[in-house]
Image 1 (cartoon, rainbow, N blue to C red):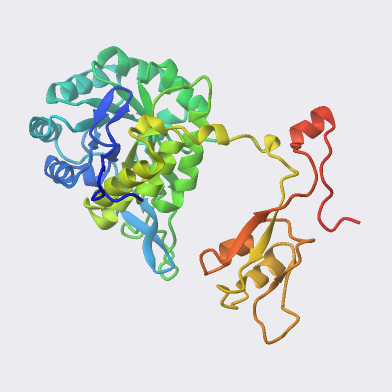
Image 2 (cartoon, rainbow, N blue to C red):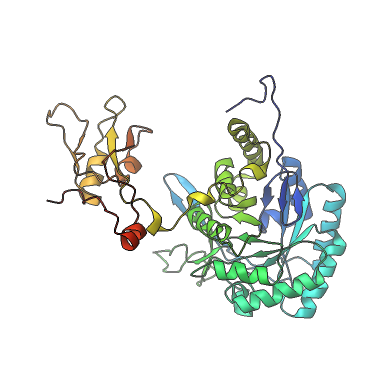
Length: 434
């Protein structure tokens, strides 16, 4: 990437606009413990965050102890994260006073207030109080999968398009600032719920909220985690492990022709590359929670620097140059070219002879990687006539770039399954067919 010290360096403009909510960069704190108080958010803004979604306001509750659980993998704890924490447990008066103080000190940063109440009158009152405190925007929490949904809020709203539309309509009736709807991933198809928010008048959506889950079980006490006395409950799953699900749902809405609303992407964002992926799939801002909880506010410094360097390297001067740029490349399975072919190539110079690829192919794929005929050489051999290009060997290989998937010119014209069904286009024979 280009260095900011090189002659001619000019930083790209990172200004983000999500449904009318303007922030100096696209990196926001998600509504969660890192955005629980004014003091925290001011420290986050000092570290470089462009916006923050205040931890959800509503009728203050009492949270339980314990609250968090985590899944570790390959030496890192917190790859998957789970919580059974609910909305703010601090008085509304305290929250509103601190919102006012933050906006007074940081007028150019985005302060979005997350809200969750029940009745029309409660929505009217809390929206008015949020705006009086200086909120730049509102986020309607229709996603919480535990605790609040049992009370008819959170995901109980997000899973019912008619209720989503109705309450969004209330908020838009009362609000003078932009309104985002935070959607739950605990549905079969995200599109009807995004469209319901649009019909209600939302200025944009944010997604995903956490996924309903049980993080694990203590096999000595037999109690699921996190443990509260001798009981537990389902919680909300988040962290880097949920990113593929979040990317899919974000892209599903972004490519829906009847949707066309701004998106604030959430779910497993741990670095600038993750943020870029969300923006390429339609997000104009991104929200981060778990990685901040694990590593602190200063992770945003690398996010900003990485995004700036990547944009310069690609020649982008502003976010709109690339937001949604990957959507045209996202299609249905039936439109994929079934005659496109790749085969695995093993670089004998960088191969360390671990033969993990051979084991994986033999037991988990298509039995096309074999021992070298020379027993003294541990570099496996690929039978290209049997290789189906599944990528498994490349995935298990511990040496970056040692195994590559190379396109093969097989002489067959482009043909998708839909082409084959509709027009009788020829599909190449399966590997190994006689």
